[in-house]
Image 1: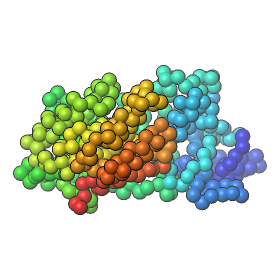
Image 2: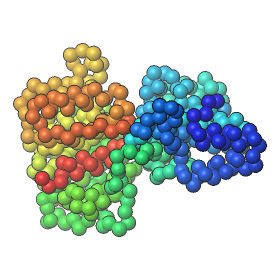
Image 3: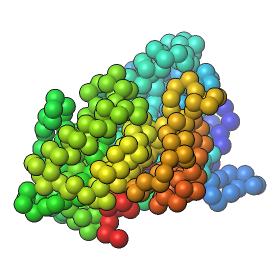
Image 4: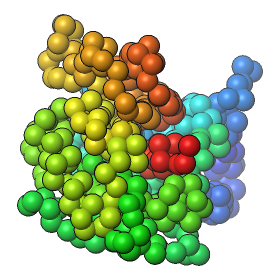
Length: 411
């Protein structure tokens, strides 16, 4: 095993020298500092813009692992799509219970990660078919020594840990602050669809009209990720005006795929049913300039489509890692990037955009850049950002807050 990490080399030398307590001292240090290990870029051509990041897993003496995979969001997924998980196999430091793997990463990288612990054949551990991969994700475990708080999951899966390298963009509004006034959360059903509503602290229906934000995939942003805490922080810091936020649930995988694929029916429901209901019930504005629709992945595509189809209701679109390659099966012919072509060929609309995409999102980066270029060429007001990360809520939760600030703050 080649050890790139100076810390691991020191451990290996201490074990080889039979230094008493070397392994326990190593784990005690890891617990104090938090993991993964983050060290300067090694070698004679060291680049200060990079770090050596070493992920660690402690073996269970009662049930030793035969293999451990480090699952770094999108980094591992890219190789899984290429049907080769071998680069993500961790190695055991000889004479220890330390499983480790090192990656050279740019110092602004942020990613969620987990470990997949296998007790069986290596062939089974490296299977990349969809069924096996879903099984890996169902059983993957967070890092018990992670330096930061975990990222919650749903559908019975375990939380993820989050790696944040020192130059990653700040996410100052993500964590709940006990000192700020808390808004009210209301569970509602609108025309048969579950919708969570976050009301700003001090809200009264007569105090409107309030700015309004529509968040797609609301079942993730609401009860799982507690984005209401971020909204409370933004309101308390005066970064956005008092805003009624609607967390629109997707009602299952099949319904999500139908609704978030440039569905005219779904967007019209948002515009003609949901927004008027929010105006009646909670004093939400009908001013498109103070209305944001936001989504990620297919939801990001749908946010941009909502602004295209119903600009008189949605004057601001916030898209994160938008699936602008849509529709399926058209990547290499004239049918690809349908929505981008609509914006290129139709008259300019009175809408604004906040777009962001991860540098690790090899399947989305060119299409997001293309949409940005088209919008800018047509004279749209566009804020565009690229973050060093992947298709990952660990990145999106900070970008969503930044996008709301940019679109809702008083101009």
